[in-house]
Image (cartoon, rainbow, N blue to C red):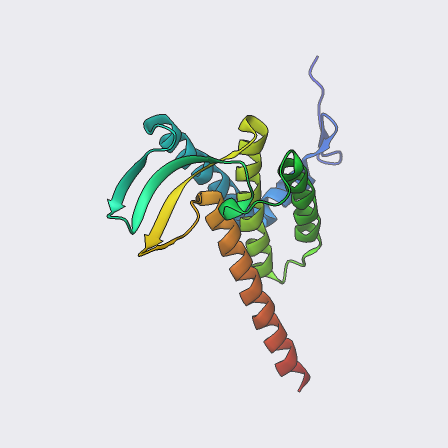
Length: 182
């Protein structure tokens, strides 16, 4: 016989349904940003790895912009930190710290919350690669003359955009607080 759940007891299978609905409703925009960052990152890596041979390049705008399929064992933009399993451990610790900071950021600081969500999306996108392959798929390749930027991916773009948005939000909030004080 099916169990009847009354509105006085919103728990279903041990979950507070109203709390879940409230969480989804109040965080929908940020959850959408998070999902978009992860999905775009993983989808783009899937397309590149499925259609290009490792180490090959396709010129899109001459030598200025190419798609170059590589596997990057290092950190963002090819930065070598310590090697070995350090990147995986660092990624997991950084992700935990980001989740904590994101959780503690007040709703009123929407710009900061979205920035942290972008950073989380990028971090999760690259962590998926590290857990799956031990390294990250990179493919955006830019060069101007002899200067060649390290090859990167959509997750790196999300992290970088999030960092810049976080800095902008901090500067804006600091200026607003200064204006309010005096």
